[in-house]
Length: 141
Image 1 (cartoon, rainbow, N blue to C red):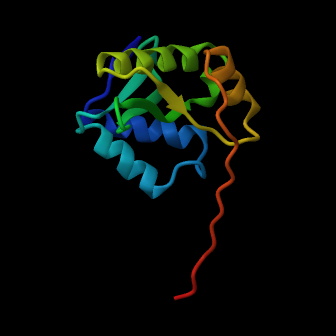
Image 2 (cartoon, helix red, strand yellow):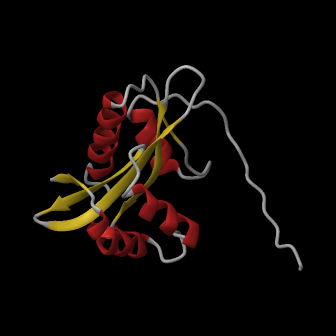
Image 3 (cartoon, rainbow, N blue to C red):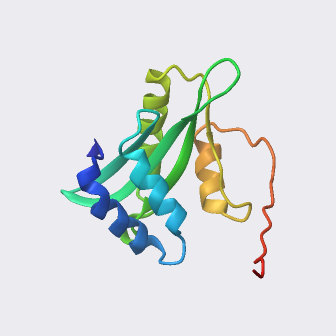
């Protein structure tokens, strides 16, 4: 069962993200998720399987010139629950939310080498727009 998350669900969301991969979630992601729980233009959904919280998805509205666009910010599924159709259910729920907000487009991103997520997006009707590489370096202060 998918439910809209509330600020009181923050610890549940954090536990799911940590279960997926301790190195995958960063402080800025945590702050973004926390902010999404109180922002009209963002939403977080938690999926419960047999009353156990196993996954969450966060989506938002991105301002475009004419109409807003829905955007999948994060999706985390506990390791023991992956490959069971939960990602597709959460993605559909996020798309419905975006339509209710007046969006005619929904977007998502992933790493170029994340075949599983790319397959999910292709299966869900997304079209690849481009491949992007991000670069970063530490600045010695």
